[in-house]
Image 1 (cartoon, each protein chain N blue to C red):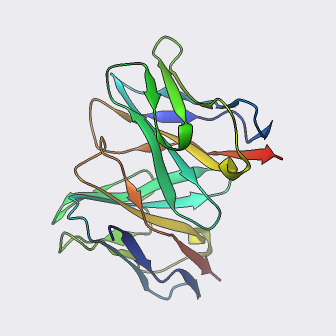
Image 2: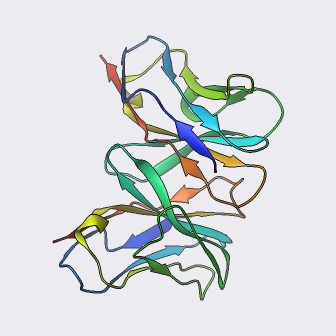
Length: 113
Length: 114
């Protein structure tokens, strides 16, 4: 089954404790992206990647890092999480770039205390 | 930079009545427009998109949207709403020029009343 998977689905952590949210897709998509969803703000793009070793900032990249060492994986790294990063995070992938349909993962609900 | 406005927080409609969810956009050059739907506790699912061609776009689950360049709008419509259409709907836009970033609106909660 074609899908985007994210782990963990739920995470409660404390300020300053480094964490990684994994994202993997099995559709051989070139484009991958991370979004955060907050009430009243909709989805905001954090980072995106056009292909392996090619990443770029979205609208809200501060406090996040990403890497794209393999085509299928696009982990989101929070080096020193803060409470304002409490949010619902979605990973998405598409065949190639912003014109193609994006397929979204199920989401990761992160709480930073 | 591209942006999307979805002016209504919530749209209430009786089952069987027409459903409209409004979206206006701002972008440099020609727009590429999308609608996604989010059911409770799920990720977003693609409904339809406008890239070029016919201004009326048909999508999944009986939804359609009309691109209006002069009004910079891309409203989502369904002739007869179902209770199962109750969900959060997002409009998104990408501009022809520049980066591959997709800008989403804040979303509209649709409530279909039996």
